[in-house]
Length: 363
Image 1: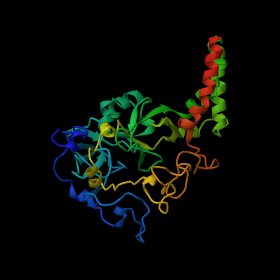
Image 2: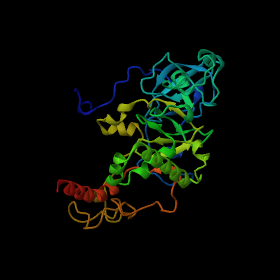
Image 3: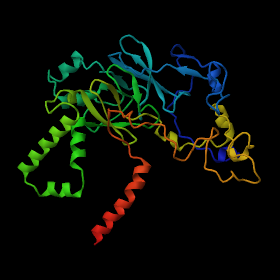
Image 4: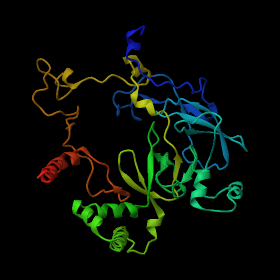
């Protein structure tokens, strides 16, 4: 490296990105005092914000309501998000739009939106009038295509996932993120009911085929009853189970949209800015440690040497920063979460139990 700043610089190579300006009709200027982390009265509400290069905000289509075939004209860098964006052009109307690009998407490819759930006449003719789910998925579940969740095969990776029917994409929009369609929530509930421990697994292995079938039916009924359907079906068919990158399993409406593939720029988390100036270009101001402040400015400030005064690590407002300060209440449980994401607290509690099981097996 020629300079110290280049010595530690690490950034992904993206030779396929467009080098010119953005499509101006789909952008607007980023102006206002919110850039410095201030509210409408000029008070700082978000620290460490300010400065940075001038930007234009890209208007990205998260609804994908426009049907028909679209051609990818180019892949662009977007300063407002970590993933890359793709400029699309409708083959019939020539209308331009931006979408979050999928990993591996390049200029010249064709994408299509089947969000309405209605298949085009040409597609039906190519299928010979058949509406078999596997044949339809083979023609529609391609990278960059937008489909309702009930048309996406189980095990498919998706991004730009909507939470509501007719709503815009809200989940898995940043670089390299994805979710997996794993089936209906009843299947997940049945698995949870069947995984109570090693005894249940051993009993399932020893029982005959007919007994196992009866047991599966009972578990399905229990899962349906738990969801409020009393075993009659109905509402369960309206939802699809999706596993997010964090490990959380959610149930989402079957008509909510998702895009096939993975969000682009998957190597974004491996980048290193290399110097402080690049952070300033991005609008990130320096962060001062509390130990380096005066006692009047931070609970950790003051004293002789690098000592925070034998106090618990707290924020500048005196709130605990390393656990112990909880903001979520147990009564506000999200009913759409089938299985919560694994947490470090739960893992620490489960470690002694694992050790006990290991000792019991060794004996």
